[in-house]
Amino acid sequence: MNANFQFDTEALTHYLTTHVPGFQGPLSVEKFAGGQSNPTFLLKAQSGSYVLRRQPPGMLLKSAHAVDREYRVLTALGQTAVPVARAYHLCEDRDVIGSLFYVMSFEDGEIFWNPALPELPVAERAAIYDAMLATMAALHDVDVEAVGLADYGRPGNYFARQIDIWTKQYRAAQTEVLAPVETLIEWLPANCPVEAGKPSLVHGDFRIDNLIFVRGSPQVRAVLDWELSTLGNPLADLAYFCMCLRLPQSGHIAGLEGLDRTELGVPDEAAIIDQYCRLRGIASIENWNFYLAFSFFRLAAIAQGVKKRALGGNASNDKARQVGEMAGVLAKMGIELI
Image (tube, rainbow, N blue to C red; front, side, top):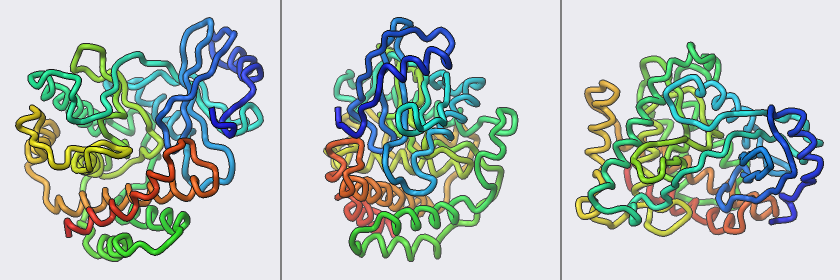
């Protein structure tokens, strides 16, 4: 484990014993391989297995790594049909392990890292996509007032605010001038669609490897990684999901670029959009390329943040610098849509 992410297991055991009902040591800690933003750990104790999500140590960008928001949304969704891990405790005392963290249940299941689903027979792949879209639609149908999340984000002008936020995040992490990013920063605000309707709960990173499936079943057991969740336009999640499927086959986020989806047995983008619209009672989606271009821009800004942390020796994954180098590539894919 990277020395930056080691912590005193004895102190953590004592803390959890007094703050998590039923927790009982001794405790062992193992870092999960994934997680560019908030480092995630498997805790094995006498009382069972748990998952700990923490902020990375060191200087952080303002509003980034919001594990407290993750904890809040998990707690709220525990009373809905959206499958999530059970939130046990949020620790805001940085002295315990060096940064904010929370503990949740360990949901044993299957994670698919490749959207081509090579580990499944062709005939079983479409059902996985059906389950993902049904889960996304259920999330967007959550009554945010009923679950106490009416103030989880600002109402109205979601994409205008998001463009501003991610532009500022990108500038804070900028290490060089990338012409494709500059083009998107200029184009997106000038082409932002007029938004109407009530905001939905938006996940912010809805992709196949952020879902745990019941083993041997096309059923979602838990949606993971809620750091970027907020209230906003649900089309952001749909476009981000489709954007991920457009990515190259190799990379931090595996995509389906260049693959025949009919041969794979997975739906094409038009079928995904149609199914989502049916599930949510939407007639059609206009300005689709805007939503995709925004998704590429936002992911480019995230990649740039990873690069900045890597250069500062503060990244949670050894491949962080490689991920960061994708910023320009992602932005270029975005401007090809405009």
